[in-house]
Image (cartoon, rainbow, N blue to C red):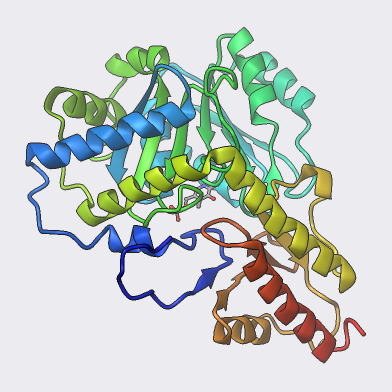
Length: 372
Ligand SMILES: *Cc1c(COP(=O)(O)O)cnc(C)c1O
């Protein structure tokens, strides 16, 4: 989108899993007069952002904004939502689940880790059994494991949690605004997301979505940190219309524009566009005889981990550089023990652009003798 009569910004297609490609209108939204963020005018913009984000997550949801990346939102949530006498189970089936466990460790929460394969679907029944046997009070789970593209059955497990009075904490950083979420239907009490993934804004804002009744309960929990305290940030903003500390002003303007564009497209249509790009990628991978780490049925269709060809002629750096010279940025794999590269198809990308990348991928694979 660029009907601004401003020069087009050089197009770079980011096929890394965030920050994602943005529209020119989102980029230009950051160019505006200097403003002191303590002015009511700016507070009103943040209120509007919170209101609109909350609507995307369900009814009676409160959104709390922090200056910080997605991990800041994860940390705010984990450090603020578990009382001293609580017991947390963290599901780890990839780098982001592992990160949540690390955060729980740093804050010395009473927690255990449930470890599962990085590429096979989670076994929900085993987790449910563990939750009951261990008398857990809280569950933390990543909805979409960006490490591999594995989509976890978070709504199913969280529904079970609610039937048993267990509070649910979800890292939906790479799911929100692509996969349709209703925190009441899906039984998510707290959920983290960020400004620079599927919502297609700029980096710099982490948000925590809270079901109002769950949020009210954490008011008396110990304050284990200061900047990232969820309840303090929430109440201060409610009272004053201001964040406690300097917000990332320009990222907020970009986020406002990104929200407008998300509403115009619609989250379901956005997922359809992302999926259309994924279809093109998968067809090309199959044509080149490349296999994917995760079975198609278990994939999010938002990022794909592709197994590297076995030939010595293959070099990720060479593929990366060829792509980069042509305006595409790709990303290495992240799951230890599996040699993969990853292609994300989130952000402001169009099927014809994914097609363009796929032609390059095929050319490269042909040049190293992987495909005829
Ligand atoms: C991107 C991402 C994060 C946050 O990463 P930051 O670099 O802190 O923005 C957290 N969880 C998941 C699942 C992610 O994909």
